[in-house]
Length: 80
Image: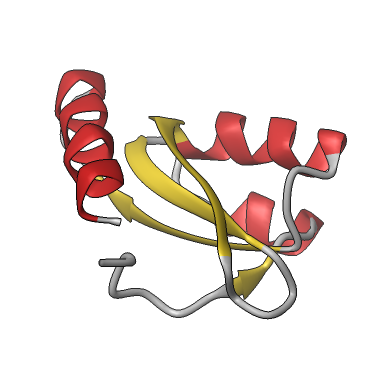
């Protein structure tokens, strides 16, 4: 089951608006197909994804800690 958040274009504006907090994120293609699921400090992770062209769209959800984000990402991968 994908994250229940709207897709956003993976661009500089979106990366700048991402929280500087831990979370889980999905990277997708232009059609909204999930390419990958990962976790980390969202703004840092999305900067890297944008720089490497890892996807065209992104959506995320915040977590309280990196450990919680890792656990949520693992559970999310299993459901998807």
